[in-house]
Amino acid sequence: MKNPKKLAIIVILGLIVILAGIFLTRDSDPLKNQEVSMEEPINVALDFYDSWAAASRATSTDPYKEELHKSPILSQELREKLKNSQDEFENGTDPVLCQTAVPQVITARPSYQLDEEAQVLILSRDEGLNGQSVATLKKLNEGWYISNIECSAGEFGEDREFTFDKDGYVLKSPELEGLYFIFAENGVFGNAAPIVFSPESACTDLDGNTSVCNVDSFGEKTKAIVRGQMSETGVDVQQLELVKGDLSFE
Image (tube, rainbow, N blue to C red; front, side, top):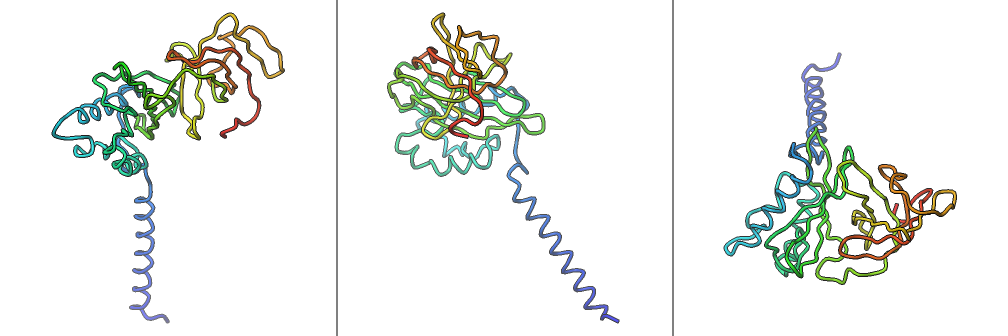
């Protein structure tokens, strides 16, 4: 017969191992303590950006001193990303506002909203500040949190008038006015631009047939290649071609 004391020790050690495994698993869950907001995605994003911009305008503080980069409405990954971007911020590259100077007025524009993900564009109304910040939000427990922030094409005053030739997704949603095109820029997916059709715009379907573009023919999320001219108002479409299979960045 086994020694009762040894058996008790083995049982206790086994329980310790099990409990340790449970706690370690819980601690490794990045969404364990994730805070969410029940507001609409555009309001969640704008609340955070307004706080960041206000702290950036202040003379006696800044967003890092206010510890806004640790905001619980941000994902754990984004908090770490902003923490690592503090040196860039101090050298004049804002990882949130994506501007060369602090704007006096910022505005938010919905890019798209799906069941579990949404994207909001944050821009400045100040003349000469052409940066564009893209906030991606995820849904959790019926609320929303900001999972990532990227600086999109045209940040830091680059010329935004250029020939456009990208593959991505045409998005159509009741929450959006018009159609938006989501594409990758410099290896970063999530850049968004309104797409504008004219009578000269040509659309090619999956069978290779080309005709005048019919906006009503697009689904909620359609793979396509868009060619045209980028302007401040979006992409003026010259050609749009529907795509089978994977896109180049997938």
